[in-house]
Image (cartoon, rainbow, N blue to C red):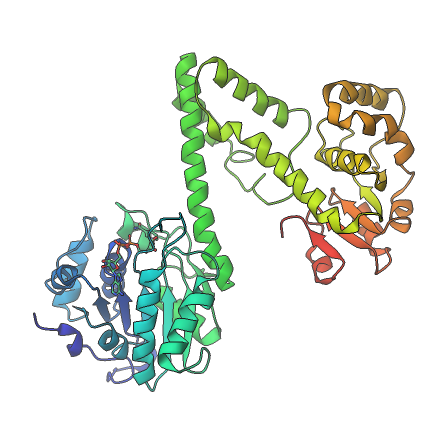
Length: 467
Ligand SMILES: NC(=O)c1ccc[n+]([C@@H]2O[C@H](COP(=O)([O-])OP(=O)(O)OC[C@H]3O[C@@H](n4cnc5c(N)ncnc54)[C@H](O)[C@@H]3O)[C@@H](O)[C@H]2O)c1
């Protein structure tokens, strides 16, 4: 096989008619589902591409303008790229890096025996890239496109490259994490109309190189930290898996009830205010109130009666309890201190105390003998509230003692709680509570269950529940 890789020139040695339009030359390490699509689509928009794979068969296919994968339009675009002199492939990773300005890593990251992400291919590729960077006099950008655990780019890829090259991140090379969101089957269409383009970069120089690459298909690149970019890919896929599993659990229940599941879910997805929307998706405190916990239990019970297995729905109450436990855990270092609660009802703007997760936290602390007090502007002790308290005392035995003592533990205003507490637990993000917190002593700690405002986060006395 002729190694066509060596026929490719780099951005630096190409004689461009107009300096402004010189595009960086790109090497792609790993010519599987992700790498082959990158080769095909980036060459189509005018980039010189050098593909690298350890599988000779894939290298040969790319060099002959044929696709190593079944994917609409990829063969056609690879053929176009090869004929236009924009595409070459090789098994020689070092040579490919030496001839290009940017390297995209798209090697496999399979599941290891223990369930973790196997980074062997990423490590091997990074080491080889490092050996090439050692020989380069110009700056090089390495873009990791594999799905990997947060921390991989900076804690695995960078050290491997630095060790193999003897060079340093920053002056000698830059790194980016740029997750791949294409769907197999419609990958080319998705490449040219991506759902989003996310880039986490080690510095401005590296990020501007990647922005230049995506400019033609997405002018609204989302920049974030490298770790957040790594995390978003995992979160996306776990979310998609959650949707599939949820839809299928609904389907299994509907089938037993002779209800058309697609009728139900067609209506479900039309609600873009609450159902398919950012609503309920931001990390915060546990769910509560008179509806969610009750209905989750009822649907779980219904499924059991129908002999339908719904492990996802069945896990929701336990998952919710973990968020209560997390709040209790955040309070553990403050045993023996005075703990004040701002907000008791299950959410702001209601006097509904039923299944309020804040009451669960208080009940645990009361049982432990901690000194607690609380304030909620929506709670006025009287007949109405008493009927709720009586109901909770019977319906939620773990909160019975708290219900007996609730009136005694509740004070008249937020400032009293703030003045008389060493730690404040805030579960409602209201102006009233934000203003009261601003008047706290700098020594008073805040456990934020409601993402009050990010300004507080810089203080060492601030503790967010999930951020
Ligand atoms: N397949 C998808 O739709 C998709 C979508 C988004 C993200 N991802 C992620 O992208 C990455 C790649 O996925 P894929 O499906 O393209 O994998 P793949 O297994 O199809 O391709 C990986 C390629 O890398 C090659 N390779 C391994 N080590 C190499 C090395 N040292 N040098 C050169 N080539 C090497 C392999 O021979 C293989 O051809 C994975 O992390 C995956 O999770 C995949």
